[in-house]
Length: 132
Image 1 (tube, one colour):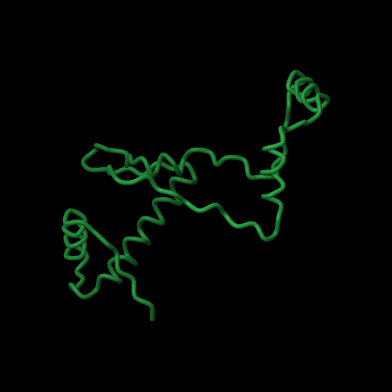
Image 2: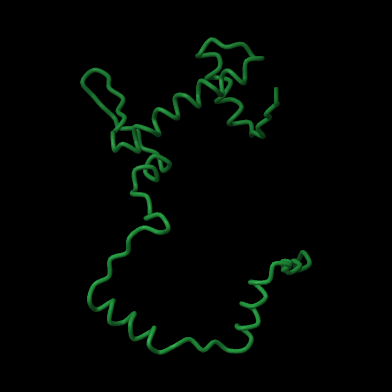
């Protein structure tokens, strides 16, 4: 069985410890705690993806669950690569004008593109500036 160790800070450790106690788990049951939290978080994420609002209710009051991660889940996913592209008439004319103009890259760009197409191409070495 593989082992997983998360690097956490004191605030996160304290919150996880409070949750562990609240769920009635022992200190040696961190994996079980993470499974429980992942199950809850997964359910919340699925509800957000479906456009549902998660609310806390008590005595006639309600408060929606608001978090930036949930907002990211609710935003529409970008079109996948290869999805159908619909252009307006003006966009079609502009694209046709560009394509009719031909493609004549400068020699340096031609060399760079040719290097990218080589099977034995190696990425360039990275150089980091000295620390200030």
